[in-house]
Image 1 (cartoon, each protein chain N blue to C red):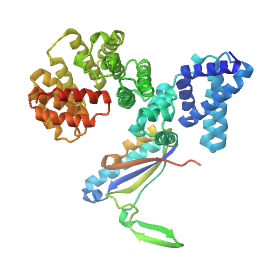
Image 2: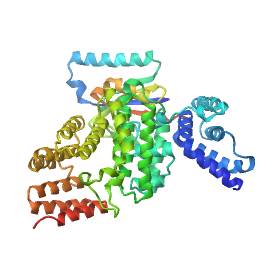
Image 3: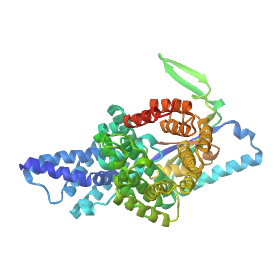
Length: 115
Length: 416
C-alpha cells in the first residue's frame, strides 16, 4: 500500500539553527531518504519552500479567489512529504517514527486512495 | 424435529463454537473486517437455505468458510479493481482453498488474537476498541453493545462502521505484533477487555441480562488472550484480576438486592474455585518476572481475599501494593483507593489529608466513590456535618440504586 507521510514542522526552527546544526539536519534527512531507497519503499519525496511562499486558490461563483498564505494558519506547517510503498499501516508508522520530522515536528500518515 | 429447525440448531451451534474463528480467518485473508462479517453472515443465510434440503454437512465450519470465501471473492470483484486487488484476490482464493480442503475445523488457523490486535490498534480510537473486539470475536450486534456501553444503537453502529472502515482503508494489519512491540501493543488489547468487563461489572446485581452477559464475554476474551499468550504475565494478571472480582459477585448483593461492601461480605458466598484459579494464574505470572498494572491489581484482590478470610487487621501489604500501582500508573482513582488503605493503616485523618490534596486536582469532583469514601472517613473523625454533606454529593452522583440506598442508610445512621 502507498502512504503519504506529511511532515509538519514549526517554520522558525530552521532559521534559529546554527549552520552546523542545519548541516546535521540535512544529513539526517539524507540518511533517512537513503534508508527508504535501500528498503525499496520510497516512491517520491520533496521538501517544500516555507509557507510564506504559499498561495491558495478557490473558485466560487465562477470566479477564482487567490489568497496569499497557506490554507491552515497553524504554528506547524507542511514542510515536505515522503510517498512510500509498504505492506501495511504498521510498516508505514515505523517509517514515520524514524523520520527526523517526528522528533522536531509531527508526521501525519495517510493511505493513498487506490484506484 | 423438522429439517429446518435442525439446520437452524446446527447453524446456531457453529456460530457459538466458531464465529470468532471464522471471522478472524476471513478478515485476515481479506484484510477487511466488515467484508469478512458480511461474507460470513451471507454464508450463514445460505446454510439456512441449503442445509434443510441437502442435510447438514459433516464439517459445517468448512462449508461456511467455502461459501463465505466465494461471497467475499464476488464482492471483491464488484467493488475493487487494480493490481493490488488482483493480488488480494489470489491470496484469498489460495488461503481459503487450503483451509477448507483440510475438511476439519481444527485445521482452520486461529487468527482471533491477530484480529484483537487489529481492533485495539493505536490508530483506532480508544473508546471504540472494546466494542469492536466484542463484535469481532463474539459477533454481538451493535444494539447489544450499545446497551452495554450506554450508547444509542445508531451511534454505536456508526462508530463501529467507521472503525472497520479505518482498518480497511488505512491498511491496519491483522497480525500479532513482533516480540519487541508486543508488550506495548498488548496493553491496548488488555485495556479494552478490562473496559468491557468493567461495563458488565457496573451492574453487579445482574438485573440487566445484556450487561450481565458482557462480563462473561469479557472473561471469555481474557481467557482467550491468556491461552494464546501464556508467556505474557500481564495477560495472566488481567484474567486473575477479573476472576477475583467475578468470584465475589454473589456476595456483593443481599437477597433483597442491597449493596454489601467488601468488609461486610459473607466469605462463604465467594466462588472458591474461581479464586483458586486466579491465585494460580497470578503465581504463574509472577514467575515470568515482569511486573505490571494488572498483576498488581490482581495481587491487591488477592490480599483483600486473604485478609477477609484470615481476619488480618494490618493493612501494610495493601498499602505497599497501592504504592507500587501508583508509581506505575499515577491515576487519581488509584491514589484515592490508596488513601483508603492508609486510613486502615494510619487512621482516617491521614487519609483525609491525602484526599484533600487529591481534590485539588479537580478530576475527582464528580467521582461518586470519592465522595462516598470522604463521607465515611469524615464520619469516623466525628465531623458529622461535613460527612452529611459529602454523603449528599455521593448520593447525587450514584447511578446504581442499590449503592444509592446503601449511602442513604449510612447517612441516616449518622449521629445528630
